[in-house]
Image 1 (tube, rainbow, N blue to C red):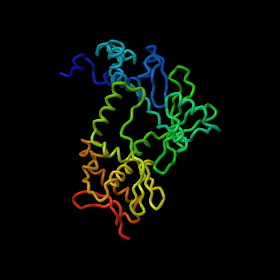
Image 2: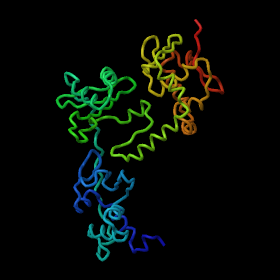
Image 3: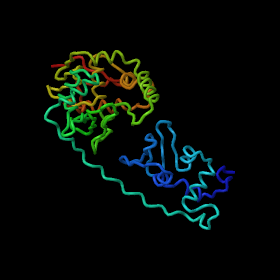
Image 4: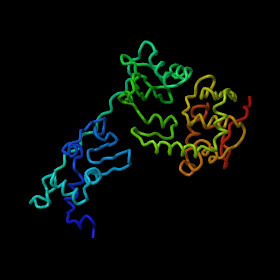
Length: 346
């Protein structure tokens, strides 16, 4: 017999309990609700996220569920007590003549239109941002390089740090603001409206975590990334060195993380650059797809990304070759893999 039916609840009753509106329920229990973007949280437990008004998750403990599990977790109720409480909350206690009558559910709100992305106005100078980041131990040359690259600036009139994420063509797609006046507190942090967080993955990022996050989980993720990349030291040394490699009209600048074709930027993504840089440091040497996959993504990822290298090579050729169907730089070695030409015929 189904355990839930053993308690004497009908399917209709369980459905009513499970579909309880969580923000309304928590307000009735005395919690202070806060709306943040597309989810709710509470002033008492700010690690809780309530989405679609029906499900909750507490990221600090990795627990979550519906209204029944909420009452079990935070109100100490057993399953039958929680269901009885919710039925009474809906006016459908088990002795009610309307116990099996379905509860009308409100129509879900229409999806909100994403606001346009507009960078905050820039301040006339960067003094507060520079001083704030120096106070946090960031080297002057690093700050200046970010400022010069248009990846950081000081906004007006609040003098926040604005960190800018750009796509492969250099267009800003994401921005995050960080207050420069902490005064002993955690300070102001907020993404600019309309920011596209996926831009990081398109630029080659492997992972990200949403705040608030568990410190132990952060360390475990870092350790996992280190394990995946333990065989890439040779690649790391070659891509981090100063200097460049030139093959015909193709120039790979390792220190600038940039590829030029006839002096013009090829606008490669991070992963595309890593593939070109790896092959360019071993011109003429043939690498299998599996070897390239292991260098770029780490050991154990080859099966997951079995077709990725082929796709990346096609995209790279579209950017660096005059005729992608007849490549001169990034060459295919049939039934083996790829190599970078070690010279070009005149």
